[in-house]
Length: 541
Image (cartoon, rainbow, N blue to C red; front, side, top):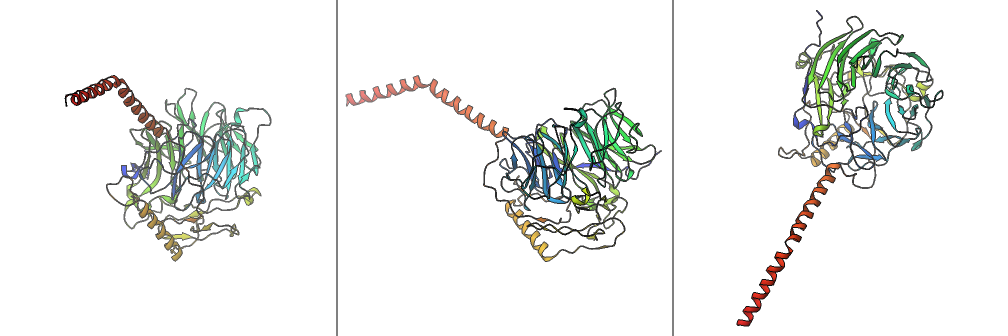
């Protein structure tokens, strides 16, 4: 019998005070996550009338949301996806039905007024853009896919507020005007970014060279795949999809030969798409279905039986999408291995769920096997280096509190501009760790941010709008100092709930006016009697 070292992992939902309430989650039917998270902020695509918007909240800003909360509302149509840059916690990308991709700079203190002016606007698609993905190792390299059957790579570090020409067109509809294999459902880069795995509308898996667009492998049409994820050092691909009997299934593939899968397993007959999430540090696979009330998790290995079911987290409310916290944002002191942010549209709620292991909660003990060196927030190379043919793995960092690692790669000259970077360096395995001391400038900056938070969100127990401290008590993260935006003050588009409240109020006023109108005859008669009585009294006098 197989015995796993991760058999005791359990899912724990956050308390009510540490959830995000009254979030108007989008009603879009696309199979996207609609949520993106980093150690500083959470971004959630919201529903609005007229244009498109999404929320950006500080990660500790839990509790009930202000109905007038400022939003990022620069798109002219519904927002379909958002993704934070893996190397800049204050840079987020969004794509929309208005055929554009926008790059936004979020101020250090969050969005304090409506953000309408993007730093970059990418105009290269003729139909709605449904998918975006950042490159895992090269800085400022973004992939976009749209319903015009084009897949483009953009270097967002190029000059100018508007970019019209991508650096690479990975896929273009040349052979046929509307080929089904060019309408993507999912895209995933390999860990070093040298390969690109795609699933498309024809339900087949393809492996491409993202620099040239050459198709290297194509799966058999017998397996209908929807989502794909690379399994890190295991050098395998995992897809979720449906069998010929319309049963949801997972399938393991060897990237060198996609003619036949290594492993397949049917799960259930539910119709929702399964989202796969893989943790390369522990080789744990998480499966969360759209519309499901549970999250299954497995341990994956390169040898048979390949995939071993561990347990599942159950809830009473279905999820519409999920966001995942990067490993550098987890609380290792409490034994946290993974953290989801479940979008529960039925309750207008965003619920954090932590995957915890009991043995990692020993005070003063750091579990090296559970927290090896992991991908950090520093890029291995620039976009131009990657385009020239260079391949590098991700820059690694240690999760041990109070340590940082030196950079093994040659330093690239920093970009000139207003952005000041205050982030720790990271490196691959085998380099000496040194202590990470906070400079006086960083400490003064953090104190200023805490003072602002305490002033805006007073810590009162009876106030539902209070700033809620993080229950994990994680160490403060380094910030990127970016100048505050100077957009004009304006109100966000009204929500449907606000319009309904105004409508009901107007209906109540109309009802009261009608009642008064129906009583006009009685009031006229009463006034005539009062006048007659007054005249009689005057005559008698």
